[in-house]
Length: 511
Image (cartoon, rainbow, N blue to C red):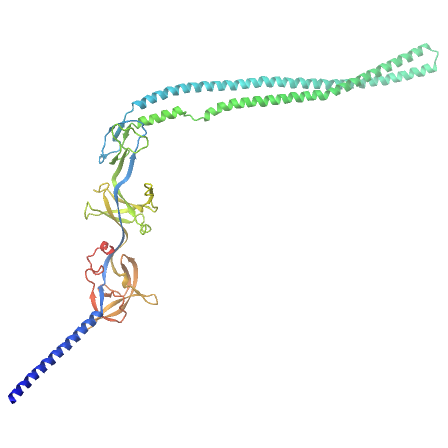
């Protein structure tokens, strides 16, 4: 019985020991799990500070073209006789591109020249007639003014004769009055003598003679007075005759002057008339058409379009061929509205194409078009508004006209600078910028400590560090929830993170 009890007791003790061992192991494992979970909950990402090449750029797409494009036209209204080039041909300046049938144009030129000769003969005769008309007008004026002047002179002479007659009569009156005064004295003397000697017959006769002489002189004076009055009465009429003759002269001169001016103006206007008549202009245009019957290349380059065939009737002004100058190239690229204010002339650019694989060409931004191009489509489509545009200049290369190209316009580029992701830059209440660094602890954890920095340009997803205490190789805390003094378990960025993968390209980061 004692052996059986001892055996059972041993079994119980063993089971109890096993239970205690298992229970202790479970508690230990639980503690370790809790510690692991706690550590996992307090894990933060850190990144090693490096020197980087920073580049900010705009990606564009476009089509390769020649530096200049020349549309070839012809003024010849004629049929295409020969086409000497095809699309893709290289031509030099002066090469014959195409010719037109010039037969009809030459016939039209000959007809125009004959018509011009007739027109010149008519014009010459007209000029001669105009000169004769001017000379006739001058001669007619001279004759009419001479006649009108003669009338003035005659009227003036009549007036002057009447005035002279009055003057002569008054002078004669003065003489007669003197004679009358002498006759009056003789009469008074004869009267005195006859009164004193009434019976003297000689005295009576002397008195009679004295009376007769006195009366005769008085009659003459009265006659002269009447003559003066009559002549003076005619003076207004004679003066009017002078004025009338003068008016006639003036009106005649005015009328004949106008006739002369009109004739002279006709001659003068011949000097200012357009030297080329309609026929002259037609002949000039025909000669230009004849010259354009052989089209020469205006420049060297590649033929990129041929819009004519033999037998076609040319329409003056329409594009026959297009030549692009490939001595230097350009890319016409569209620019999105978000980027148009950032792109400027002169910025460097890198060009690639799918045809040339990874090969790159250096170029530069040329003309920037900051106006959206509007074009009208079908009535159903309405007005179509395209993006803004820019021209990218590139040197001569094996790129071909029409290739699709990718362009990277470099806005800003910095080489080998200390930089950190812009999200890790913090600012305190005093506007001081700083970052948090991961300071290692003995137990393998890290503590977030402050590191003051001076920031420079922000390029792409990075901010340049231009001053402060940050050094290359420092471990920077990326987690924004970590505060200064916090302890955490570090976790480096994996390769899938854009900032942790050193091999990730800037294009991949932007995408």
